[in-house]
Image 1: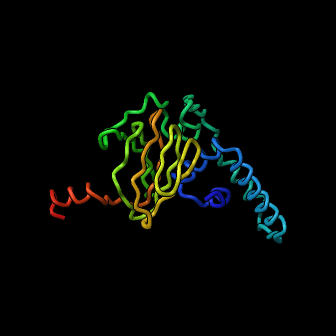
Image 2: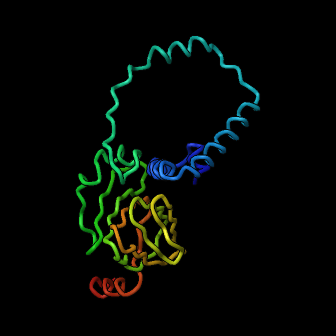
Image 3: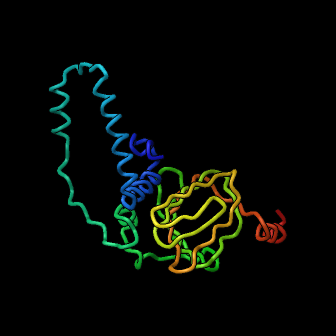
Length: 203
């Protein structure tokens, strides 16, 4: 995923998630810089291609360029890294959380790449119902921590889940666990809650 970020090939939502991770983890920034340097050296070794009518085309590009608009600075927030503050346009205290399940609140962000990007606030000590995924889910921890069968994740850590993983993450005791997750397909409930829902819906 870091290689995809360095190459600029990630979907927009994942790009923001990785940018936030890099803000929190200097060691990952060093890795990305190394990948970018390798890519730059490879480009320098490639033979150049002549551009017909170069001067006229460059002049047209510069003439069409608009004056840059004043950039609105993202609000300062101790929990949300600047890439996510810029995405939400809010501090954490200003986010209009919506109740998803008891102890779990969410705030969905608009996307243009077909994925879902969501901030979650999970009450300390809360266990999320067992579920798996119909696609992939990439989760960045912003505050607090959680554990599942794959390990323990704290601020700046990234957890990746897919259809092969059935888990029920549990937030640590202490501060609420706040995460930013990007999914490319819905999750699917398993375990007792799934059986209860099937009995009610008949599916």
